Length: 196
Length: 108
Image 1 (cartoon, helix red, strand yellow):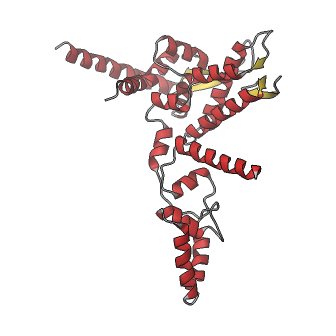
Image 2 (cartoon, helix red, strand yellow):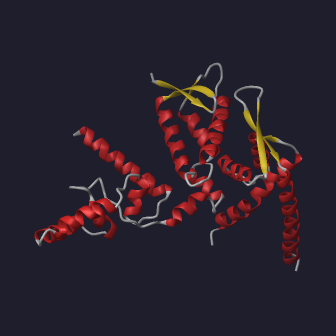
């Protein structure tokens, strides 16, 4: 026995197995990231979703009424993964997006003690945040300069909120692969925390 | 050099031209364009087509209207605009020039 979910895909309503749903959702999310830099990304996605609806429809019969994992895999093989799609169009926005590789300073909310200023600087220069913290502490002891400086930087440096910003903070190029990696890392951390 | 990559580059260059050529014969649904491109083996995965259609639409080369289909929700029905026809005529000429150039080199 399996739990099924009811979804609306391109105007059709489908019953879909829970595991197939997870796979479908992951695929659509990856496509969304792939097309994120396109001017009309939501339009492209809705076109793809409606095509997916057609493909699913063609797999259903009076005796088979639920979309299963193999149907999702079939649809993905027909439409192609983001990697397949970018193989076919090397100048796609996906790669232009990837090649930018910004390196900017952000405050790091994940490693922060106070405002994430030192953690962000550590990530930016690829040094231990504790080293930065020690320097700030010494400056703070010498007439409070460190404290003033810290608060100014807190105001001036933006916080890394999105996954893309967190990657930029470390100076890695932002592309589908490392967004995937860091989303996965974040997911793992959350799972671990929930288990504790 | 990567053979697969070189082939993909070649296909990529003509894909846009092929889409406009299909639409120049008659207006149709995206699924019809896909069928023709697949028969002619210019696309491998269907996902390649949708960003191109949207870009061509944004560039004013084609337009679409929503058409009721026999079964299921309405679908986009694509057609070339006047600008698209001009653009295609230009591409037709440059394609012929390319074929001529390549033939000339290969026949020597």
